[in-house]
Length: 251
Image 1 (cartoon, rainbow, N blue to C red):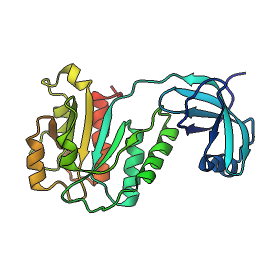
Image 2: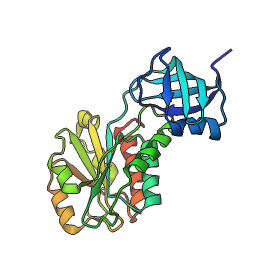
Image 3: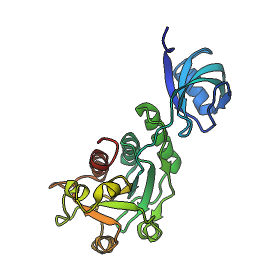
């Protein structure tokens, strides 16, 4: 007969296991009942970032509540590339775009940072997390990126993990091309398989003093994304795509 038709795919926080029922929050219940108009007996795919992806059956559904029952595991948990996105927040619609595309491109953490030229004063973390979750659901990912509180750039870098390389998208013309940086023989195959992060700046770019301080840090690799100046959200997509192609899971 084959697998039942999957009505939608949802991220959940709870542990997933065969025959272990779980309830959904009011927002998810509303989505299933009023948007998708599902009825008990419908099948879903659910994942939590730890237990793989499970086929689940909708057991009950009402106003503000829903219950599902995991039936069998469809896919086991997978080891994904450990790539952080460290970015200066930008205006609302474009930061939504960043959260969505960074998730689709496989980021494991979204880390907003405040730079000298950052114009955005407040980051709506719940909105950022919701965009990341929805993108993970739609892109068949088995995990959802961690969304971290904004931090001043050099405060974050003061306790930066020793084993994580930070690739800086530098709009300055003197930095080497990103492909050359990532294929440098000095990195070695082991280094190319280690943890990475991409750093992108605000609309106005990094201030000269920031670029100077960043260039002096041993874990920072400066690179340019090409001969044209990109918008901040475009730089995120371009940088992550090259990272995944050369050191991530696109190889």
